Image 1 (cartoon, helix red, strand yellow):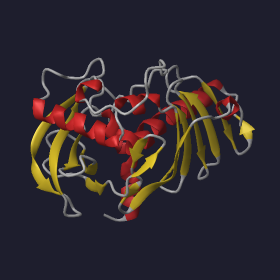
Image 2 (cartoon, rainbow, N blue to C red):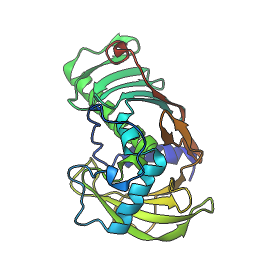
Image 3 (cartoon, rainbow, N blue to C red):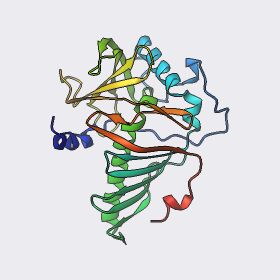
Length: 261
């Protein structure tokens, strides 16, 4: 697959309802080694998911740092494919998106869809034009954040998990493969993923993307490599031909970053 085609596909990957993290309630943020400390989100398709796939999802959460540490993580920032820069307040739903390609800055709250936009140094006042940019910002956030934190969202609302098989990734790692499909959620609920989980590390090491549940072969397969610890959680930025850079978990961010250009 050439890189131009690869980039074109990225906005087709916005498949999930990306439920916003509620504000951390002050519980102990220490890592937990009990899988039951990772509760399914309201609306997770427990009845149709199988026990083996759910157990693997629990093991992934533990390997990534644990549910409590994920819950306690508030601010994340990253650059998507050497282009868009994002800053996300996971507790409040505020997102700052800086896009150097079309010189826009979008400040949007993904919980209530409010915000403001600047293009070419000029704030956009037209209501319809601003609404279009804010909606675009939410779509960007859904896509770009899923490429960063998908392993933490295996038991999200609307997700159905099925254990498929053992298989070897494109980098040669023996892995358990679980299938993610989506039930009445997201902008493209007909899509699916196969997620490969390393049998030794229990970290996600590959995903295969399908435009429909019936498609026999993936549109693309992308590795998840080079995990590092950020704050108290593990994140990967290496996606093979492309990647996420400038990844950071931050303890404090000025509120003006979400309100001022």
